[in-house]
Amino acid sequence: MTRESAVILLHELKTDSLILTKRNESLRNHPGEFCFPGGMRDLKDQDLWSTALREVHEELGIDSSRIACVKALKPEYTLLGKIIYPWLATISALQPYVMNKHEVSDVISLPMKEVSCRNNYKELCIEKANKKIITCQYTAYPHLVWGATARIMQQLCLDKKE
Image (cartoon, rainbow, N blue to C red; front, side, top):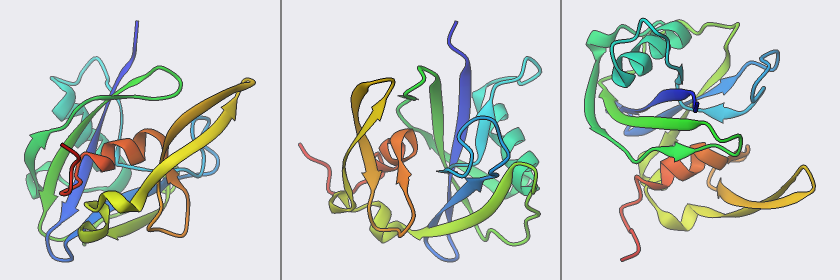
């Protein structure tokens, strides 16, 4: 059975930017990687949107009343075979927030103008278990944003290929 997870692509209207978090280095899965607020579905979650809202509250202390859903995006699979259900949502301003330091070590804002430009993405070849895997990398930020996170971000590109 594939475990489901949900993430929120939080578009901060005040700065016209996309919010990403950096996972704490002590976490077992994906330590130190940049990602969207979100996580695995719990049995108590009513649906995947509820999962995403719960996780944003756990990671950043942001109440769900401050977040407005825009739309569900196309689900993505990770290299480990897990499925991620992404949601695009808006928030007037990220502040105030309280970072859960056990899960998150940093919060970054990426300008939507850059996130939505297809030229800021390129293929990335990685080797995992002696296999070459082609994935995606976001290149308009000095730190590595790649894999499912970058592929989900690509869904926001305004200059989509026909």
